[in-house]
Amino acid sequence: MTTWGVKEYAVSGRDSGPYAITAGPDRALWFTMVHSGQIGRLVPGQEPTSHQLAPDSGPTVISNGPDGALWFTEYRAHRIGRVTTAGRVTEFALPTARCGPFGIAAGPDDALWFTETAADRIGRLTTDGSVTEYPLPCTGAFPSAIAADGDAMWFTMNQANATGRIGMDGHITVHELPTAAAAPVGVAVGPDGGVWFTEIAAGQIGHRAPDGRITEYPLPDRSARPHAVTTDADGTAWFTEWGGNRVGSITSDGIVTAHDLPTPASEPHGITVGPDGALWTALETGALARIGPTTNIATRNTEQENASCNTPS
Image 1: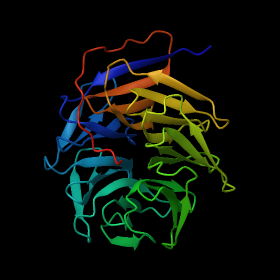
Image 2: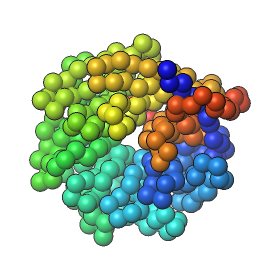
Image 3: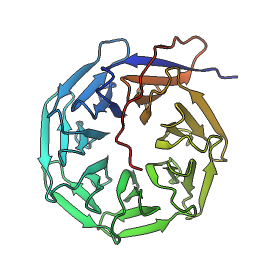
Image 4: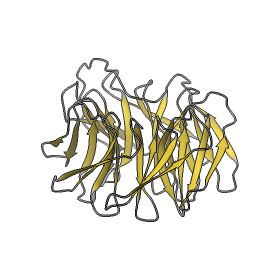
């Protein structure tokens, strides 16, 4: 039987707010610090480093780009940022003022696709800085996370209670969810083309099969407030329980497993598969946590205070 363990790595002060995380092309973990306006980098076993942006820029979601750099949204500064693995930062202004970019992911067309939470638009940014915006067919939708799937992008519509699909031609299709006021946030596409998403207000994980069938899986703790989701090579979906202080997994047949985090009220947000094959999550109270199979793993268990968050609700 596989034994799972959790180890936490302190990467910042309590007030910096590690928020989203991804594994970079340099086999390091890159993460945003939403409160201090920094992009962080960690190679396990080494000291973390960081790159300072404007302190009030609010870097939020970070993703690998098609050009070997890391791309991120600046939610409060209404910009898209790019950082190379050597640490060079470039920022791109967006055409729509105060649009609130949040989710970002590289598309199959080698452009960056992002959500504009406050403008009801999906944006497309080429690596040379050209921006196109596509209006959603509804208002007040609060588009949130976004993920690539073959020839399209899938995104959540937090306040419209739906997921959306946008093709490379800009055509948008909206798919309503069965549960009212579920408030989807995170989204990920599995290796089979199925779409996983978190329902933060309903305490459920949703799945849309390639044939269009939607299944919702209630979590054992309906107050867990699932936030971000990713998938591993086996197609298992892994998600953070921001309100439950846990990381969970769910298989294609709906079996849920929960892993408690050792530090109370650590506020897990983003999650990714690391270069070591383990799951890594960003804890807003100042650490990254590794969740992986092991027989002997040390954990940090220091008291943490609760912190504010930037989670769509």
